[in-house]
Image (cartoon, rainbow, N blue to C red; front, side):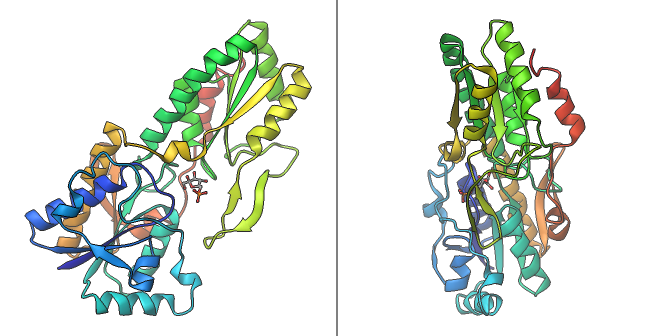
Length: 342
Ligand code: F6P
């Protein structure tokens, strides 16, 4: 078989580890050939490809980002997008596609499968919000980066008796905020899953100062205050209809400073969370997902997404995985609440 591989959506550490595993097993065990499509769905849409063999995947296991490039191109928003993809796959003699992506990229894969394209999906996102898989690679690395940042910020918060607000990624799901906040000993954690009362947050912050200990507030970029709307960076939507977030951390710091009279500063971790080398956990998970993905392709098991369930790598229907986002259950949030303000 000649198999196309693409990476779509926001990059994350571990993408290259998947590509490497797919190609190494695909060539060595099954004798398949590969072609790398560039920049997500833009690659097959515009016929942008590059060679992808053993030589091209040497040394990429620890590298962050993706050697194939990525984009948020949505072929269903482009005239004749699906037909163009089918034509380009045929023109390049490609029998099947492995799409590595999150909710948007795999949403496209789900629809293309229904339209007759041979596709297998691999879940990735630092947000850990894809259904049907316990973890996505990229998440562990992002949490560790955010945790280390929180550890460092504790010392400055103490020295200067300041509140430090740490804004982390997480548009609809607060997994990064929850895990990094728990691991880093945050004083308060705010998630998109539950609107927060800024008065209550100010109360937690005051209490922490009373204990002679400066507070760290971890806020997911998609968290919203009770009394207002989501703070938007701008109103532009991408081709999947997402707004560009950012700003809740700054807004919150201003509110906390005004309400407590104590200086409050914000650190926005942004793309630092998605950069650099993957953790060992993410390298292993990405590698195992890649191995299962090439097995699925070899067996012609189309329309599946490989997933981690417990410690096993299994296959689930793409449609099931992309049906709804996996958000933080409120009882999980309640575990963290025990530490708020104390
Ligand atoms: O989906 C991954 C993610 O990092 C989200 O946490 C974040 O909201 C979004 O991508 C940011 O996207 P971009 O890098 O395109 O601004």
